[in-house]
Length: 256
Image (cartoon, rainbow, N blue to C red; front, side):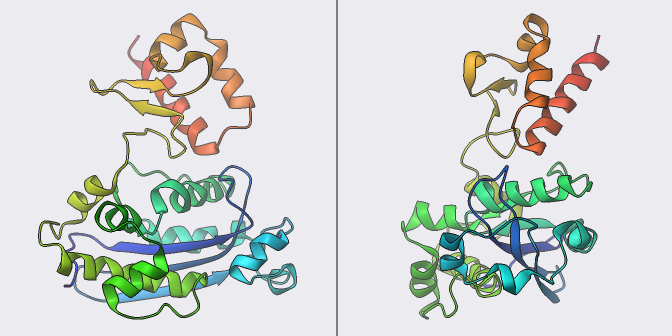
Protein backbone atom coordinates (compact mmCIF):
# COMPACT_ATOMS: atom_id res chain seq x y z
CA UNK A 1 0.00 0.00 0.00
CA UNK A 2 1.42 3.36 -0.99
CA UNK A 3 1.29 6.21 1.53
CA UNK A 4 -1.42 8.85 1.27
CA UNK A 5 0.45 12.11 1.62
CA UNK A 6 -0.58 15.74 1.82
CA UNK A 7 3.03 16.84 2.03
CA UNK A 8 6.41 15.13 1.57
CA UNK A 9 7.70 12.77 4.22
CA UNK A 10 11.38 12.04 4.87
CA UNK A 11 12.37 8.64 6.18
CA UNK A 12 15.83 8.91 7.70
CA UNK A 13 18.36 7.00 9.73
CA UNK A 14 21.52 8.00 11.57
CA UNK A 15 24.68 6.12 12.41
CA UNK A 16 26.44 7.82 15.29
CA UNK A 17 29.39 7.85 17.67
CA UNK A 18 27.09 6.66 20.48
CA UNK A 19 23.64 6.95 22.02
CA UNK A 20 23.94 10.13 24.10
CA UNK A 21 21.69 12.63 22.31
CA UNK A 22 23.40 15.63 23.87
CA UNK A 23 27.02 14.59 23.34
CA UNK A 24 27.30 12.12 20.48
CA UNK A 25 27.61 12.99 16.79
CA UNK A 26 26.39 11.74 13.42
CA UNK A 27 28.81 9.71 11.28
CA UNK A 28 26.31 8.81 8.54
CA UNK A 29 22.87 10.09 7.59
CA UNK A 30 20.55 8.74 4.94
CA UNK A 31 17.32 10.43 3.88
CA UNK A 32 14.64 8.91 1.65
CA UNK A 33 12.05 11.52 0.65
CA UNK A 34 8.63 10.54 -0.69
CA UNK A 35 6.44 13.17 -2.36
CA UNK A 36 2.62 13.22 -2.53
CA UNK A 37 2.78 12.62 -6.30
CA UNK A 38 4.77 9.43 -5.76
CA UNK A 39 8.17 10.82 -6.71
CA UNK A 40 11.09 9.78 -4.53
CA UNK A 41 14.48 11.25 -3.75
CA UNK A 42 17.31 9.82 -1.65
CA UNK A 43 20.64 11.01 -0.35
CA UNK A 44 23.26 9.48 1.95
CA UNK A 45 26.23 11.31 3.48
CA UNK A 46 29.18 10.09 5.50
CA UNK A 47 30.03 12.68 8.16
CA UNK A 48 33.22 13.60 9.97
CA UNK A 49 31.96 13.79 13.57
CA UNK A 50 35.01 15.84 14.71
CA UNK A 51 35.26 13.52 17.74
CA UNK A 52 36.64 9.96 17.91
CA UNK A 53 34.32 7.09 17.02
CA UNK A 54 34.48 4.55 19.87
CA UNK A 55 35.40 0.97 18.85
CA UNK A 56 32.10 -0.32 20.23
CA UNK A 57 30.20 1.99 17.87
CA UNK A 58 32.37 0.98 14.89
CA UNK A 59 31.58 -2.63 15.76
CA UNK A 60 27.88 -1.86 15.21
CA UNK A 61 27.93 0.19 12.00
CA UNK A 62 31.40 -0.50 10.58
CA UNK A 63 32.33 3.17 10.18
CA UNK A 64 35.88 3.94 11.34
CA UNK A 65 37.66 7.18 12.11
CA UNK A 66 39.77 6.67 8.99
CA UNK A 67 36.71 6.23 6.78
CA UNK A 68 35.28 9.64 7.70
CA UNK A 69 38.51 11.59 8.19
CA UNK A 70 38.14 13.42 4.87
CA UNK A 71 34.35 13.66 4.85
CA UNK A 72 32.50 16.95 5.49
CA UNK A 73 31.46 17.86 9.02
CA UNK A 74 27.78 18.07 9.88
CA UNK A 75 28.06 21.85 10.08
CA UNK A 76 29.10 21.81 6.42
CA UNK A 77 26.28 19.44 5.49
CA UNK A 78 23.58 21.06 7.63
CA UNK A 79 22.21 23.40 4.92
CA UNK A 80 21.81 20.47 2.50
CA UNK A 81 20.17 18.26 5.12
CA UNK A 82 17.79 21.01 6.22
CA UNK A 83 16.90 21.91 2.64
CA UNK A 84 15.85 18.30 2.07
CA UNK A 85 13.65 18.01 5.18
CA UNK A 86 12.37 21.56 5.70
CA UNK A 87 9.02 21.01 3.94
CA UNK A 88 8.48 17.47 5.18
CA UNK A 89 7.11 15.32 7.94
CA UNK A 90 9.64 12.85 9.37
CA UNK A 91 9.69 9.09 9.87
CA UNK A 92 12.15 6.52 11.11
CA UNK A 93 12.72 3.48 13.30
CA UNK A 94 13.04 4.59 16.95
CA UNK A 95 13.22 8.09 15.50
CA UNK A 96 11.09 9.86 18.13
CA UNK A 97 13.39 8.82 20.96
CA UNK A 98 16.76 8.97 19.23
CA UNK A 99 17.17 10.03 15.59
CA UNK A 100 15.02 13.18 15.64
CA UNK A 101 16.40 14.45 18.99
CA UNK A 102 20.01 13.87 17.88
CA UNK A 103 19.38 15.43 14.45
CA UNK A 104 17.86 18.46 16.15
CA UNK A 105 20.94 18.83 18.35
CA UNK A 106 23.27 18.66 15.34
CA UNK A 107 21.21 21.21 13.38
CA UNK A 108 21.01 23.64 16.29
CA UNK A 109 24.74 23.19 16.88
CA UNK A 110 25.20 24.18 13.22
CA UNK A 111 23.05 27.31 13.75
CA UNK A 112 20.06 25.90 11.85
CA UNK A 113 16.85 26.77 13.70
CA UNK A 114 15.09 23.40 13.53
CA UNK A 115 11.84 22.54 15.30
CA UNK A 116 8.80 20.28 14.89
CA UNK A 117 6.08 22.95 15.17
CA UNK A 118 4.78 22.62 11.63
CA UNK A 119 5.43 18.94 11.03
CA UNK A 120 4.62 15.54 12.52
CA UNK A 121 6.65 12.38 12.91
CA UNK A 122 5.89 8.69 12.52
CA UNK A 123 7.97 6.20 14.49
CA UNK A 124 7.70 2.89 12.63
CA UNK A 125 9.26 1.08 15.59
CA UNK A 126 6.34 2.09 17.80
CA UNK A 127 3.82 0.66 15.34
CA UNK A 128 5.89 -2.52 15.24
CA UNK A 129 6.22 -2.78 19.02
CA UNK A 130 2.54 -2.07 19.61
CA UNK A 131 1.62 -4.74 17.10
CA UNK A 132 4.37 -7.38 17.21
CA UNK A 133 7.33 -6.57 19.57
CA UNK A 134 10.48 -7.11 17.47
CA UNK A 135 13.69 -5.46 16.08
CA UNK A 136 14.27 -3.77 12.70
CA UNK A 137 15.74 -6.88 11.05
CA UNK A 138 12.92 -9.03 12.45
CA UNK A 139 10.38 -6.43 11.37
CA UNK A 140 11.70 -6.48 7.82
CA UNK A 141 11.57 -10.29 7.78
CA UNK A 142 8.11 -10.34 9.34
CA UNK A 143 6.45 -7.66 7.23
CA UNK A 144 8.38 -7.88 3.97
CA UNK A 145 9.36 -11.55 3.93
CA UNK A 146 13.02 -10.76 3.27
CA UNK A 147 16.29 -10.76 5.19
CA UNK A 148 17.74 -7.32 5.79
CA UNK A 149 21.12 -7.16 4.07
CA UNK A 150 23.68 -4.62 5.34
CA UNK A 151 21.84 -4.00 8.61
CA UNK A 152 23.25 -0.97 10.45
CA UNK A 153 24.03 0.70 7.16
CA UNK A 154 22.04 3.94 7.29
CA UNK A 155 20.86 3.59 3.69
CA UNK A 156 19.72 -0.02 4.07
CA UNK A 157 17.97 0.72 7.38
CA UNK A 158 16.23 3.78 5.92
CA UNK A 159 14.87 1.97 2.86
CA UNK A 160 13.81 -0.99 5.03
CA UNK A 161 11.90 1.35 7.34
CA UNK A 162 10.01 2.82 4.39
CA UNK A 163 9.09 -0.64 3.09
CA UNK A 164 8.03 -1.79 6.58
CA UNK A 165 5.62 1.13 7.04
CA UNK A 166 3.94 0.38 3.71
CA UNK A 167 3.65 -3.31 4.66
CA UNK A 168 2.25 -2.39 8.09
CA UNK A 169 -0.53 -0.43 6.40
CA UNK A 170 -1.32 -3.49 4.29
CA UNK A 171 -1.30 -5.83 7.31
CA UNK A 172 -3.28 -3.69 9.75
CA UNK A 173 -6.47 -2.30 8.16
CA UNK A 174 -7.24 -0.53 11.44
CA UNK A 175 -4.24 1.76 10.82
CA UNK A 176 -5.36 4.79 8.85
CA UNK A 177 -3.17 5.69 5.88
CA UNK A 178 -2.72 9.25 7.08
CA UNK A 179 0.57 10.67 8.35
CA UNK A 180 -0.95 12.82 11.10
CA UNK A 181 -2.95 9.86 12.43
CA UNK A 182 0.10 7.59 12.27
CA UNK A 183 2.09 10.24 14.12
CA UNK A 184 -0.49 10.33 16.91
CA UNK A 185 -0.48 6.52 17.07
CA UNK A 186 3.32 6.38 17.40
CA UNK A 187 3.64 9.17 19.97
CA UNK A 188 4.57 7.65 23.32
CA UNK A 189 3.97 10.67 25.53
CA UNK A 190 3.19 14.33 25.25
CA UNK A 191 6.70 15.73 25.51
CA UNK A 192 7.35 19.35 24.64
CA UNK A 193 11.05 18.80 24.05
CA UNK A 194 12.55 15.72 22.39
CA UNK A 195 14.45 14.58 25.48
CA UNK A 196 11.32 14.53 27.64
CA UNK A 197 12.50 16.99 30.30
CA UNK A 198 9.35 19.08 29.71
CA UNK A 199 5.94 17.50 29.13
CA UNK A 200 2.27 18.45 28.87
CA UNK A 201 -0.35 17.56 31.46
CA UNK A 202 -3.99 16.79 30.67
CA UNK A 203 -4.77 20.51 30.63
CA UNK A 204 -2.06 21.24 28.07
CA UNK A 205 0.21 22.92 30.64
CA UNK A 206 3.97 22.43 30.52
CA UNK A 207 5.67 20.84 33.54
CA UNK A 208 9.16 19.60 34.40
CA UNK A 209 9.65 15.82 34.51
CA UNK A 210 12.90 15.74 36.49
CA UNK A 211 14.83 17.11 39.45
CA UNK A 212 13.64 19.16 42.39
CA UNK A 213 10.77 20.60 40.37
CA UNK A 214 9.54 17.31 38.97
CA UNK A 215 5.81 17.54 38.13
CA UNK A 216 5.80 21.31 38.84
CA UNK A 217 4.42 23.64 36.17
CA UNK A 218 7.13 25.48 34.24
CA UNK A 219 5.36 28.82 34.69
CA UNK A 220 5.21 28.27 38.47
CA UNK A 221 8.96 27.59 38.54
CA UNK A 222 9.59 30.78 36.54
CA UNK A 223 7.72 32.66 39.29
CA UNK A 224 9.15 30.99 42.38
CA UNK A 225 12.73 30.34 41.21
CA UNK A 226 13.75 32.66 38.32
CA UNK A 227 17.33 31.43 38.51
CA UNK A 228 16.32 27.90 37.53
CA UNK A 229 15.99 28.97 33.90
CA UNK A 230 19.55 30.27 33.90
CA UNK A 231 20.82 27.11 35.56
CA UNK A 232 19.31 24.95 32.80
CA UNK A 233 20.70 27.22 30.08
CA UNK A 234 24.21 26.88 31.51
CA UNK A 235 24.00 23.18 32.38
CA UNK A 236 24.52 20.13 30.18
CA UNK A 237 21.00 19.89 28.75
CA UNK A 238 20.17 19.30 25.07
CA UNK A 239 20.13 22.44 22.95
CA UNK A 240 16.56 21.73 21.87
CA UNK A 241 15.41 21.58 25.51
CA UNK A 242 17.03 24.97 26.11
CA UNK A 243 15.37 26.35 22.96
CA UNK A 244 11.94 25.13 24.07
CA UNK A 245 12.39 26.54 27.59
CA UNK A 246 13.41 29.91 26.16
CA UNK A 247 10.27 29.92 24.02
CA UNK A 248 8.12 29.24 27.09
CA UNK A 249 9.83 32.01 29.04
CA UNK A 250 9.32 34.49 26.19
CA UNK A 251 5.68 33.46 25.95
CA UNK A 252 5.21 34.10 29.66
CA UNK A 253 6.91 37.50 29.46
CA UNK A 254 4.72 38.50 26.51
CA UNK A 255 1.56 37.82 28.52
CA UNK A 256 2.52 40.08 31.40
